[in-house]
Image (cartoon, rainbow, N blue to C red; front, side):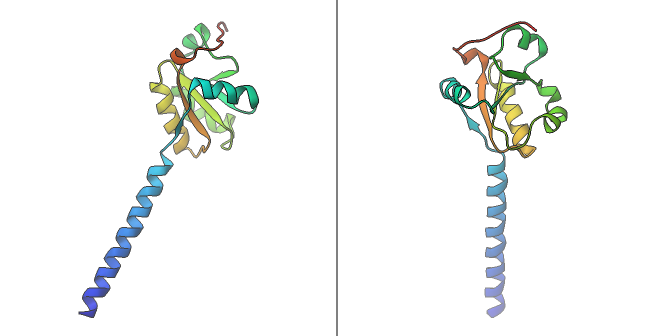
Length: 132
């Protein structure tokens, strides 16, 4: 009887450890969405925020949010580690929000902790600029 109880306790402990592990992994892959209204206020009050555009060069030159840095999603993993500190607050956007969500997940998986998905420039009703 005693051996059965020990086995049950060991099984319970294993289940608890597994649950905690999966919760940590799940939380590691989460990120925060930020609206254009929230972002504009933050950007006006904090010059240290990096506004990251993950679209193509052509899209960036056609229309972009002022102060944004172009880092196409295809180059993100190879460039970001050398160019942006992991503690920096980063707002990520693209055209419609699909690539920005993918980019935010990449950044979180690389260890960036202060990453926000701004979504698509299509939803940005504030000032934009164009050109090289």
